[in-house]
Image (cartoon, rainbow, N blue to C red):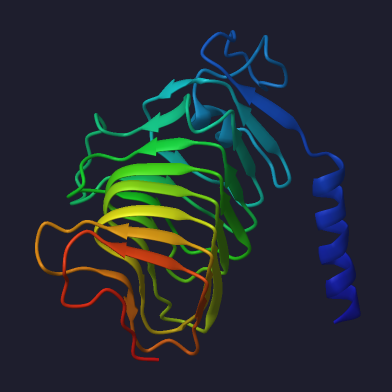
Length: 248
């Protein structure tokens, strides 16, 4: 056991020691390995494909019409939700829903405006992973803003607009801890939905539900291991059958 732990630690130390910062920009020459603004990749995914565990990808302002699939251990930093845009509205797929960003373990996603498809089609961020941070992003035009599946995750200070559901949590393998904090959600149906296998901490969020029907909920769900829900503000546009409910 000691030998295995030592070997694993050496691999991790080596990966972090040689970690690179890589760049993405619409004005770079797109010359691998993309380690300067002058040689920056013209595609987020092309840059990620070259990355190793521990690398950071910095993305300049621009509209990037592509889906993004993380590799493990990557930090992806956009230049801000006003002008650093992942736009998947024109992406063709054989799936029912477009999926804009797929997370992996030990990854961080910050500073992007993710335009998915339409409010009735698509998922902004999805995947099953350990130790994930999703922070300071804006997600719009989606059926579900974030669907992390079997993931331990921090979802903090994000903005959701024109989505059916902002965040949907569930886990089919083991109890997962998900922290949802300080987000702003403008939703057509549900703010936060939780299901089996979850152990969420939901705090300091603002949820505006403006369903056209007399249905909708700021927070709803059941079957979680435990749930801590406190200091959230839920605003209902019209009288609904439930503004907030849970079976815990």
